[in-house]
Amino acid sequence: MKKLLILLAFSLLLPVLRADRIVLNDGSVLNGTLKSITDGTLLFATDYAGELKISAQRVVKLDTVGAVEIATLDGQRIQGRLNTQEQAAPAQEETPVEGIPAVPAALTLGNVKYLWTAGMEDPTLPPARKWDGEFSLDVSGKTGNSEKFNGGAGAIATLAGPVDKLMLHANASYGREDHNTNTKKYLAGVDYEHKLLDSPTTWYVNGELEQQTTSGLRLRQEVGAGLGYYLFQGKDSSLRLRAGFSAKARKYTDGSHNDTMGSQVGLHYERNIQEWGKLVTDLTFQPSLENFHDYRALHESSLDIPLVFQYPLSLRLGISNEYNSRVAKGSDRLETNYFAKMVFKWK
Image (cartoon, rainbow, N blue to C red):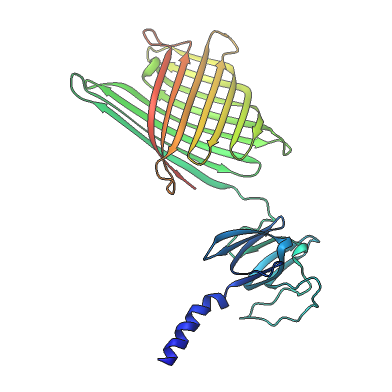
Protein backbone atom coordinates (compact mmCIF):
# COMPACT_ATOMS: atom_id res chain seq x y z
CA MET A 1 0.00 0.00 0.00
CA LYS A 2 2.84 2.38 0.87
CA LYS A 3 4.50 1.75 -2.51
CA LEU A 4 1.20 2.31 -4.25
CA LEU A 5 0.73 5.68 -2.54
CA ILE A 6 4.28 6.71 -3.47
CA LEU A 7 3.69 5.76 -7.13
CA LEU A 8 0.38 7.65 -7.13
CA ALA A 9 1.96 10.77 -5.68
CA PHE A 10 4.82 10.57 -8.16
CA SER A 11 2.38 10.23 -11.09
CA LEU A 12 0.56 13.36 -9.91
CA LEU A 13 3.77 15.32 -9.58
CA LEU A 14 5.29 14.14 -12.87
CA PRO A 15 3.44 16.67 -15.11
CA VAL A 16 4.54 19.49 -12.81
CA LEU A 17 8.12 18.24 -12.71
CA ARG A 18 8.25 18.13 -16.53
CA ALA A 19 6.46 21.43 -17.06
CA ASP A 20 8.04 24.71 -18.06
CA ARG A 21 8.31 27.07 -15.11
CA ILE A 22 7.96 30.86 -14.81
CA VAL A 23 8.77 32.98 -11.75
CA LEU A 24 7.20 36.46 -11.78
CA ASN A 25 8.46 39.59 -10.06
CA ASP A 26 5.69 39.33 -7.44
CA GLY A 27 6.89 35.86 -6.42
CA SER A 28 4.22 33.91 -8.30
CA VAL A 29 5.26 30.62 -9.89
CA LEU A 30 3.50 29.28 -12.98
CA ASN A 31 3.87 25.76 -14.38
CA GLY A 32 2.78 24.92 -17.90
CA THR A 33 4.06 25.10 -21.49
CA LEU A 34 5.84 28.05 -23.06
CA LYS A 35 4.43 28.57 -26.57
CA SER A 36 6.24 31.65 -27.84
CA ILE A 37 7.67 35.09 -27.15
CA THR A 38 6.80 37.91 -29.55
CA ASP A 39 7.23 41.65 -29.09
CA GLY A 40 8.10 41.22 -25.41
CA THR A 41 5.01 39.10 -24.63
CA LEU A 42 5.08 35.47 -23.52
CA LEU A 43 2.33 33.07 -24.55
CA PHE A 44 2.15 30.48 -21.78
CA ALA A 45 -0.35 27.59 -21.69
CA THR A 46 -1.56 26.15 -18.37
CA ASP A 47 -4.01 23.38 -17.45
CA TYR A 48 -5.75 25.51 -14.85
CA ALA A 49 -6.07 28.93 -16.58
CA GLY A 50 -5.72 28.22 -20.31
CA GLU A 51 -3.35 30.35 -22.40
CA LEU A 52 -1.91 33.40 -20.64
CA LYS A 53 -0.18 36.43 -22.14
CA ILE A 54 2.55 37.70 -19.83
CA SER A 55 4.82 40.71 -20.27
CA ALA A 56 8.49 39.72 -20.33
CA GLN A 57 9.19 42.59 -17.93
CA ARG A 58 7.31 40.70 -15.21
CA VAL A 59 9.39 37.52 -15.61
CA VAL A 60 12.47 37.12 -13.40
CA LYS A 61 13.16 33.46 -14.22
CA LEU A 62 12.11 31.06 -16.96
CA ASP A 63 12.95 27.37 -17.29
CA THR A 64 11.92 25.05 -20.14
CA VAL A 65 12.13 21.27 -20.19
CA GLY A 66 12.40 21.07 -23.99
CA ALA A 67 14.39 22.82 -26.68
CA VAL A 68 13.29 26.20 -28.01
CA GLU A 69 14.40 28.36 -30.94
CA ILE A 70 15.49 31.90 -30.12
CA ALA A 71 16.27 34.94 -32.27
CA THR A 72 17.93 37.72 -30.30
CA LEU A 73 17.85 41.46 -30.84
CA ASP A 74 21.55 41.45 -31.74
CA GLY A 75 21.01 38.92 -34.56
CA GLN A 76 22.00 35.64 -32.88
CA ARG A 77 20.17 32.33 -33.43
CA ILE A 78 20.13 29.99 -30.44
CA GLN A 79 18.61 26.55 -29.92
CA GLY A 80 18.37 24.68 -26.65
CA ARG A 81 16.78 24.44 -23.23
CA LEU A 82 16.11 27.85 -21.68
CA ASN A 83 17.16 28.62 -18.11
CA THR A 84 17.27 32.38 -17.53
CA GLN A 85 18.63 34.09 -14.44
CA GLU A 86 17.63 37.28 -12.67
CA GLN A 87 19.64 40.28 -13.79
CA ALA A 88 21.43 40.48 -10.47
CA ALA A 89 22.13 36.75 -10.27
CA PRO A 90 25.49 35.35 -11.43
CA ALA A 91 25.58 33.15 -14.50
CA GLN A 92 25.41 29.44 -13.67
CA GLU A 93 26.66 26.53 -15.70
CA GLU A 94 23.83 24.36 -16.98
CA THR A 95 24.09 20.63 -17.61
CA PRO A 96 22.37 18.98 -20.58
CA VAL A 97 18.99 17.33 -20.00
CA GLU A 98 18.11 14.30 -22.14
CA GLY A 99 20.71 15.36 -24.68
CA ILE A 100 19.28 18.89 -25.05
CA PRO A 101 21.96 21.58 -24.58
CA ALA A 102 21.21 24.55 -22.37
CA VAL A 103 21.00 28.08 -23.72
CA PRO A 104 23.86 30.24 -22.37
CA ALA A 105 22.92 31.41 -18.88
CA ALA A 106 23.94 34.98 -19.72
CA LEU A 107 20.92 35.31 -22.03
CA THR A 108 18.17 37.55 -20.64
CA LEU A 109 14.58 37.89 -21.86
CA GLY A 110 15.26 41.54 -22.67
CA ASN A 111 17.50 40.35 -25.53
CA VAL A 112 14.92 37.90 -26.94
CA LYS A 113 13.21 39.15 -30.10
CA TYR A 114 11.37 35.91 -30.93
CA LEU A 115 11.05 32.54 -29.25
CA TRP A 116 9.16 29.59 -30.68
CA THR A 117 8.91 25.85 -30.08
CA ALA A 118 9.11 22.78 -32.30
CA GLY A 119 6.37 22.60 -34.92
CA MET A 120 5.79 26.36 -35.08
CA GLU A 121 6.63 28.54 -38.09
CA ASP A 122 9.84 30.53 -37.92
CA PRO A 123 8.64 34.11 -37.22
CA THR A 124 11.86 35.56 -38.63
CA LEU A 125 10.92 34.33 -42.11
CA PRO A 126 8.28 35.97 -44.33
CA PRO A 127 4.84 34.41 -43.78
CA ALA A 128 4.21 31.52 -46.14
CA ARG A 129 1.32 31.42 -48.58
CA LYS A 130 -1.66 29.51 -47.18
CA TRP A 131 -4.65 27.90 -48.85
CA ASP A 132 -8.19 28.37 -47.59
CA GLY A 133 -11.57 28.19 -49.20
CA GLU A 134 -15.23 27.31 -49.01
CA PHE A 135 -17.92 25.08 -50.48
CA SER A 136 -21.53 26.25 -50.78
CA LEU A 137 -24.80 24.50 -51.58
CA ASP A 138 -28.37 25.80 -51.99
CA VAL A 139 -31.55 23.92 -52.90
CA SER A 140 -35.18 25.08 -53.10
CA GLY A 141 -38.36 23.68 -54.58
CA LYS A 142 -42.13 23.84 -54.82
CA THR A 143 -44.93 21.39 -55.54
CA GLY A 144 -48.68 21.84 -55.98
CA ASN A 145 -50.20 24.02 -58.69
CA SER A 146 -46.75 24.20 -60.27
CA GLU A 147 -43.52 22.24 -59.96
CA LYS A 148 -40.35 24.20 -59.30
CA PHE A 149 -36.78 23.22 -58.45
CA ASN A 150 -33.69 25.39 -58.10
CA GLY A 151 -30.27 24.28 -56.98
CA GLY A 152 -26.73 25.53 -56.99
CA ALA A 153 -23.23 24.69 -55.83
CA GLY A 154 -20.03 26.70 -55.65
CA ALA A 155 -16.44 26.56 -54.52
CA ILE A 156 -13.74 29.16 -53.81
CA ALA A 157 -10.06 28.43 -53.16
CA THR A 158 -7.67 31.22 -52.09
CA LEU A 159 -3.89 31.12 -51.84
CA ALA A 160 -2.85 34.19 -49.83
CA GLY A 161 0.59 35.45 -48.89
CA PRO A 162 2.00 38.65 -47.40
CA VAL A 163 2.13 40.49 -50.75
CA ASP A 164 -0.15 38.60 -53.15
CA LYS A 165 -3.37 36.60 -53.38
CA LEU A 166 -4.69 34.09 -55.92
CA MET A 167 -8.40 33.21 -55.96
CA LEU A 168 -10.06 30.47 -58.00
CA HIS A 169 -13.83 30.22 -58.07
CA ALA A 170 -16.53 28.19 -59.78
CA ASN A 171 -20.27 27.77 -59.41
CA ALA A 172 -23.20 26.18 -61.18
CA SER A 173 -26.95 26.68 -60.93
CA TYR A 174 -29.88 24.78 -62.37
CA GLY A 175 -33.62 25.42 -62.31
CA ARG A 176 -36.77 23.75 -63.65
CA GLU A 177 -40.39 24.87 -63.69
CA ASP A 178 -43.20 22.54 -64.77
CA HIS A 179 -40.66 20.11 -66.25
CA ASN A 180 -39.03 22.84 -68.35
CA THR A 181 -35.48 23.99 -67.72
CA ASN A 182 -35.45 27.74 -67.18
CA THR A 183 -32.01 28.19 -65.63
CA LYS A 184 -28.72 26.57 -66.47
CA LYS A 185 -25.61 28.53 -65.65
CA TYR A 186 -21.93 27.63 -65.23
CA LEU A 187 -19.20 30.10 -64.28
CA ALA A 188 -15.51 29.73 -63.53
CA GLY A 189 -12.90 32.41 -62.91
CA VAL A 190 -9.49 33.35 -61.61
CA ASP A 191 -8.25 36.53 -59.92
CA TYR A 192 -4.68 37.43 -58.96
CA GLU A 193 -3.47 40.60 -57.22
CA HIS A 194 -0.02 41.70 -56.04
CA LYS A 195 1.00 44.63 -53.85
CA LEU A 196 3.23 47.35 -55.28
CA LEU A 197 6.23 48.14 -53.05
CA ASP A 198 4.45 47.10 -49.84
CA SER A 199 1.83 49.83 -50.32
CA PRO A 200 -2.00 49.86 -50.40
CA THR A 201 -1.76 49.88 -54.21
CA THR A 202 -1.98 46.59 -56.12
CA TRP A 203 -2.00 45.37 -59.70
CA TYR A 204 -4.33 42.59 -60.76
CA VAL A 205 -5.32 40.28 -63.60
CA ASN A 206 -8.51 38.25 -63.80
CA GLY A 207 -10.59 36.18 -66.15
CA GLU A 208 -14.02 34.56 -66.34
CA LEU A 209 -15.78 32.00 -68.49
CA GLU A 210 -19.59 31.82 -68.29
CA GLN A 211 -22.17 29.66 -70.04
CA GLN A 212 -25.91 30.10 -69.45
CA THR A 213 -29.36 30.22 -70.98
CA THR A 214 -30.74 33.24 -69.12
CA SER A 215 -30.62 36.67 -70.83
CA GLY A 216 -30.22 34.81 -74.12
CA LEU A 217 -26.47 34.57 -73.44
CA ARG A 218 -24.86 31.33 -74.57
CA LEU A 219 -21.19 32.02 -73.81
CA ARG A 220 -19.20 34.88 -72.30
CA GLN A 221 -15.38 35.05 -72.16
CA GLU A 222 -13.62 37.90 -70.42
CA VAL A 223 -10.10 38.85 -69.28
CA GLY A 224 -9.06 42.01 -67.48
CA ALA A 225 -6.17 43.79 -65.80
CA GLY A 226 -5.62 47.01 -63.89
CA LEU A 227 -4.76 48.65 -60.58
CA GLY A 228 -6.36 48.40 -57.16
CA TYR A 229 -6.16 50.47 -54.01
CA TYR A 230 -7.12 49.53 -50.44
CA LEU A 231 -8.82 52.57 -48.92
CA PHE A 232 -8.47 50.73 -45.62
CA GLN A 233 -7.48 47.20 -44.70
CA GLY A 234 -7.65 45.87 -41.16
CA LYS A 235 -8.31 42.69 -39.25
CA ASP A 236 -12.08 43.22 -39.14
CA SER A 237 -12.82 45.26 -42.27
CA SER A 238 -11.42 46.27 -45.66
CA LEU A 239 -12.49 48.40 -48.63
CA ARG A 240 -10.84 47.95 -52.04
CA LEU A 241 -11.27 50.01 -55.21
CA ARG A 242 -10.25 48.69 -58.63
CA ALA A 243 -10.07 50.19 -62.11
CA GLY A 244 -8.78 48.60 -65.30
CA PHE A 245 -9.47 47.38 -68.83
CA SER A 246 -11.03 44.22 -70.17
CA ALA A 247 -11.55 42.27 -73.39
CA LYS A 248 -14.91 40.55 -73.73
CA ALA A 249 -16.41 38.09 -76.21
CA ARG A 250 -20.14 37.20 -76.05
CA LYS A 251 -22.24 34.76 -78.07
CA TYR A 252 -26.04 34.72 -77.86
CA THR A 253 -28.64 32.03 -78.33
CA ASP A 254 -30.06 33.85 -81.36
CA GLY A 255 -26.77 33.38 -83.23
CA SER A 256 -25.38 36.90 -82.80
CA HIS A 257 -22.06 37.69 -81.17
CA ASN A 258 -20.27 40.74 -79.79
CA ASP A 259 -16.54 41.25 -79.16
CA THR A 260 -15.60 44.44 -77.36
CA MET A 261 -12.85 46.18 -75.45
CA GLY A 262 -14.05 47.74 -72.23
CA SER A 263 -13.14 49.14 -68.86
CA GLN A 264 -14.03 47.82 -65.44
CA VAL A 265 -14.50 49.60 -62.12
CA GLY A 266 -15.17 47.65 -58.94
CA LEU A 267 -15.66 48.12 -55.22
CA HIS A 268 -15.22 45.30 -52.68
CA TYR A 269 -16.16 45.66 -49.00
CA GLU A 270 -15.78 43.14 -46.17
CA ARG A 271 -16.63 43.48 -42.50
CA ASN A 272 -16.54 40.99 -39.63
CA ILE A 273 -19.45 41.69 -37.29
CA GLN A 274 -18.06 40.89 -33.85
CA GLU A 275 -17.67 37.08 -33.67
CA TRP A 276 -20.90 35.93 -35.30
CA GLY A 277 -21.09 37.20 -38.85
CA LYS A 278 -19.42 38.54 -41.97
CA LEU A 279 -20.83 41.09 -44.41
CA VAL A 280 -19.54 41.23 -48.00
CA THR A 281 -20.60 43.61 -50.79
CA ASP A 282 -19.34 43.75 -54.38
CA LEU A 283 -20.16 46.41 -56.99
CA THR A 284 -18.86 46.18 -60.57
CA PHE A 285 -19.45 48.35 -63.63
CA GLN A 286 -18.14 47.24 -67.05
CA PRO A 287 -18.83 49.66 -69.95
CA SER A 288 -17.64 49.11 -73.50
CA LEU A 289 -15.02 51.54 -74.82
CA GLU A 290 -16.55 51.42 -78.30
CA ASN A 291 -20.11 52.10 -77.17
CA PHE A 292 -20.74 53.45 -73.68
CA HIS A 293 -24.39 52.33 -73.91
CA ASP A 294 -23.18 48.72 -74.01
CA TYR A 295 -22.39 47.86 -70.40
CA ARG A 296 -22.82 45.31 -67.63
CA ALA A 297 -23.46 46.17 -63.96
CA LEU A 298 -23.21 43.69 -61.10
CA HIS A 299 -24.08 43.84 -57.42
CA GLU A 300 -23.99 41.22 -54.67
CA SER A 301 -24.37 41.57 -50.91
CA SER A 302 -24.32 38.66 -48.47
CA LEU A 303 -24.23 38.01 -44.74
CA ASP A 304 -22.65 34.89 -43.25
CA ILE A 305 -24.18 33.68 -39.98
CA PRO A 306 -22.35 30.80 -38.20
CA LEU A 307 -24.71 27.96 -37.35
CA VAL A 308 -22.42 26.47 -34.69
CA PHE A 309 -19.58 28.67 -33.46
CA GLN A 310 -16.99 25.91 -33.02
CA TYR A 311 -17.56 24.50 -36.52
CA PRO A 312 -16.87 26.15 -39.92
CA LEU A 313 -20.49 25.81 -41.06
CA SER A 314 -22.54 28.93 -41.75
CA LEU A 315 -25.73 30.17 -43.40
CA ARG A 316 -25.27 32.77 -46.14
CA LEU A 317 -28.16 35.09 -46.92
CA GLY A 318 -27.89 37.52 -49.78
CA ILE A 319 -29.11 39.25 -52.90
CA SER A 320 -27.47 39.67 -56.30
CA ASN A 321 -28.37 41.83 -59.30
CA GLU A 322 -27.04 41.64 -62.86
CA TYR A 323 -27.95 44.22 -65.50
CA ASN A 324 -26.93 43.76 -69.13
CA SER A 325 -27.73 46.63 -71.47
CA ARG A 326 -27.48 44.29 -74.46
CA VAL A 327 -29.47 41.04 -74.38
CA ALA A 328 -31.14 38.77 -76.90
CA LYS A 329 -34.60 39.69 -78.14
CA GLY A 330 -37.33 38.87 -75.62
CA SER A 331 -34.92 38.66 -72.63
CA ASP A 332 -34.95 40.90 -69.57
CA ARG A 333 -31.98 43.18 -68.95
CA LEU A 334 -32.16 42.93 -65.13
CA GLU A 335 -31.94 39.71 -63.16
CA THR A 336 -32.35 39.70 -59.37
CA ASN A 337 -31.59 36.65 -57.29
CA TYR A 338 -32.29 36.12 -53.59
CA PHE A 339 -30.37 33.26 -52.06
CA ALA A 340 -29.76 31.25 -48.91
CA LYS A 341 -26.76 28.93 -48.96
CA MET A 342 -25.09 26.47 -46.64
CA VAL A 343 -21.36 27.26 -46.58
CA PHE A 344 -18.52 25.09 -45.30
CA LYS A 345 -15.19 26.90 -44.88
CA TRP A 346 -11.80 25.19 -44.67
CA LYS A 347 -8.25 26.24 -43.88
